[in-house]
Image 1 (cartoon, helix red, strand yellow):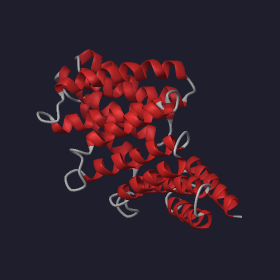
Image 2 (cartoon, one colour; image 1 turned 90 degrees about the vertical axis):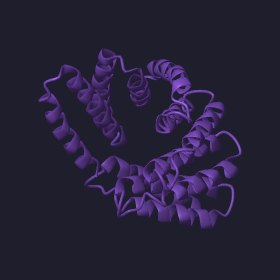
Image 3 (cartoon, rainbow, N blue to C red; image 1 turned 120 degrees about the horizontal axis):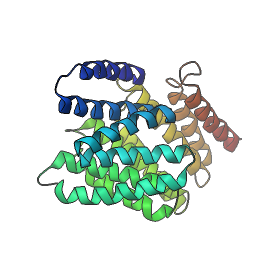
Image 4 (cartoon, helix red, strand yellow; image 1 turned 45 degrees about the horizontal axis):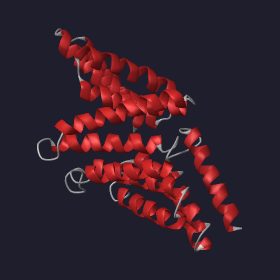
Length: 272
C-alpha cells in the first residue's frame, strides 16, 4: 500500500518537472516532496524522509508558504528525534508550536474548518512527540486537546480516514500518559481510541494502518494486563499482535515484524 503510494508520488514528481511555469513547478515539488517524506516516516525510513522533507522545506521557503513550512518543520522534528538528535528536534518543535499557534489565528474553525483541523492535528502530533522528550503529562494533555479540536471537523461520517488517524494518535497520547500517571485509566482510554480508529482502518481496505493500530492495541492491552484482568488482557494483546502480523510479515516489513514479535513475547511472558 505505502510502496504503491511512493510509486504514484514519483510519477507525479516526473509530471511536475515538465511544468513550464516555475511557480507551479515549485509548488508541485513542495507538495510532492512533503507527501513522499511522510510516507517514508510511516515506513520508519528516517534518512529518506529527512531528504524529501528538507527539499519540501526549501520549496516552501522559496514560495513564502508559511503554512506548508510549519507542517514540514513539525515532521522534520519527528525525524531528528528518531535519529537521536533531541536538541535539534526540540528546537524545531518549539518553532512548530509557535507557528501553529500563529496559523490558528487565521485558520479558524469558523472560516477555514479543514485547515483548522489539519493545523490542530499537526499541533497534536508535535505535542505528542514533544512529550517523549520532556514534560510528558503536560504535553500529552495538550496533544489530546488539539486532537479533539481536530475531531470537530474530522468526523467519522465526513472524513473517515482523518477521523481514524486522529483517534489512533489520541490512543498513542493516552498510552504515553499511562507511562507516567493513572496507568490503568489511561490505558483504557487508549484502547477505546484505537477501537474507534479500527472502525475505518480495516484489514481489507487499509492493511498498513490496520496493522499499525492493532500493534498499538496490543501494547495497550499488555500494559493494562499489569494492573487488571491479567489473563483476559494478555489474551487480547496476543490477538491484536496476531492481527498485526497478517500485514507485518518478516519478508515485507521485517522491522515492524520484529517489533510486534517483541510485544507478543512480552504478552506471553506476562501470561505465564
